[in-house]
Image 1 (cartoon, helix red, strand yellow):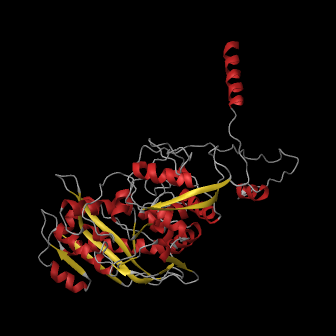
Image 2 (cartoon, helix red, strand yellow):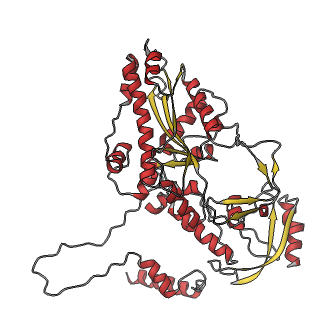
Image 3 (cartoon, one colour):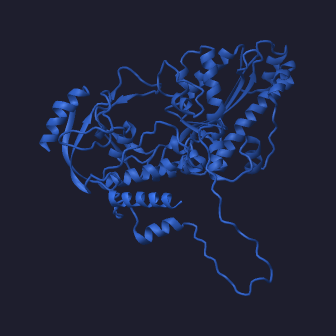
Length: 493
């Protein structure tokens, strides 16, 4: 093992400009596809700063034939090494207050090593701050961009994650309304707002509206932002308008201080997720697709199916006419507020947050990803934790140069409307043909047993696992015989 260390220190570290690293000899097991890797062996474990370059996945040397973990993310390493399974209480040893804050959080602390963070078990989760969001937009006839004219939000400052949802599900609210460029507020609007006795802020421009909204987000500091199609529409429009109107401190929509806005319009929701990092985004459209069967997952249909109520929809082309008088303008604002209430009620009825917390605590991934509906990532982290705890080397993620077609299961991974991402196609699998029984045709009774969980039953019965199934490397002789058979068939035809 000393030869491996010397080669890494003298050749690899120097070539890839890794100035400082730590290493130690470890014993690890391996149970996957690479044929030349033994089931158990000694390895050199190397740790170095994420500031240094990533090693290539196919790196080989004179004293070693393979390198594992070159493309493992820092988040994955941290979760696996500290055995953190979802949101939980953490004990942080020797924290130091940050001299240069990198976030918008009230308190920011720094630790020097990951092992200074450990999980505290058997403590109830704390209540969270939940904000339900609804917007009204109008398309600009010249620029064809959606402009925001109204935002309504409902807030609960102590929303429980381990109890039944509170009634009512919100404690405070705020609304902000701006006017369109070619419209004016009705002359009696201020008086009408006072009579309503509602918490309504009037902004003269869209830029003022967005600045007020960001200031509110910063003050309330929500842990969870809830919306309907928030990944597909709301967040993207908010960020586009903030960028277009040059509103300062756009990153307050999340918790990380940043100056450069991520590139929008990719269709995958990555930029929106990136911009709101530090806050959990709950899209009830995605959650409803996972939890219930419905003809449509539009907000009106969800309100009808789940809340047994009827939602009034104001067409975007009618919003401009609402500025003609105070009654219609207040009705439009009230309609926005009611939509935010419907969104919050649906989240409570479906028990979205407690279920997502339980799933994340079991799988060991990140709750924000659980709420995006990706099932395969949950399975991945469940196995990553299990194999890491049992001292196995986990396989590296394959790197695909081209976007590959995926099944419906993998399409759910991104949690957005996959019709927008045309490079991903849903695989259509035809099921077995079921014939309607004919009365009097059969003279014998047939008992059909249908297993709900057939695959897990087979796995348990026969102890099927990566660690128990011994897979032989493909034999070149067998491949040669198969090739010869194909040649014989060609000659015969």
